[in-house]
Amino acid sequence: MSEKRDFKEKIEAFIYDFPVCEFFYLTPEDLVFSDKVRFICETECTRYGKCWACPPAAPPIDKCIERCRNYQHVFLFSTVGEVSDSLNMSACLAAKRNHEEVTLQLRERFREEFGEDVLALSTGCTLCDTCAYPAEPCRHPDKRLSTIESHGILLLGTVEKVGACYECTSETVVFFSLLFFND
Ligand code: SF4
Image 1 (cartoon, rainbow, N blue to C red):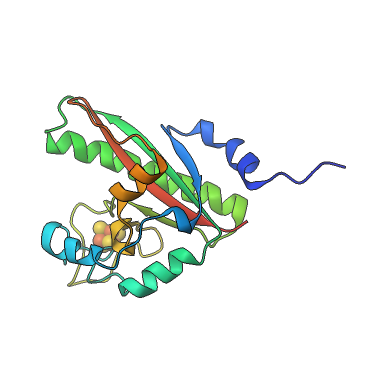
Image 2: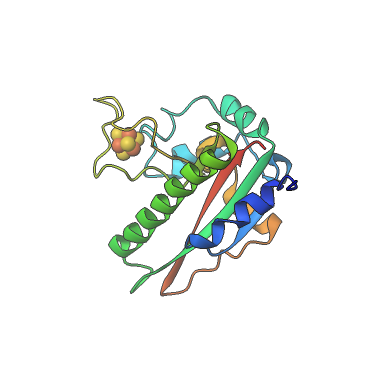
């Protein structure tokens, strides 16, 4: 009789097929939450008020934090994009889209393994060239990815706490995503 594989064994059976740089097994307690993150969204982010996946269209901050805290496991991973110049915005956007695609693929793979209730947070929705917000409904509500920050998580504080590498060079950019799941 075969032994039941634990969640790490299940993930490690497929994760190396994806272009993931680093990954970490976390729980919600490892994440740095702050309900002040929305203030940063509002005052510093160009996407605030321009996307269905971002505040203020996102659910209230306390609901987002509560949802994250109710999962058993958090899988943090990074991808590294190679760009001709990390100050070149269009090159960085292409690398970001690639990271979002990897995140969507991994969300599907986690759902196959752990059930439909998998929450993915990433760098923000890039599915449409121009978001339909606010005039029209979201074109892909089941597919869109919200940002890590929209759910009250301080990304830099979290990656520093867990020891993830976030150093960029003139020719590389690093992106992070979180997958929340139960086993
Ligand atoms: S899928 Fe399109 S309409 Fe929906 S949030 Fe993303 S960019 Fe906006």
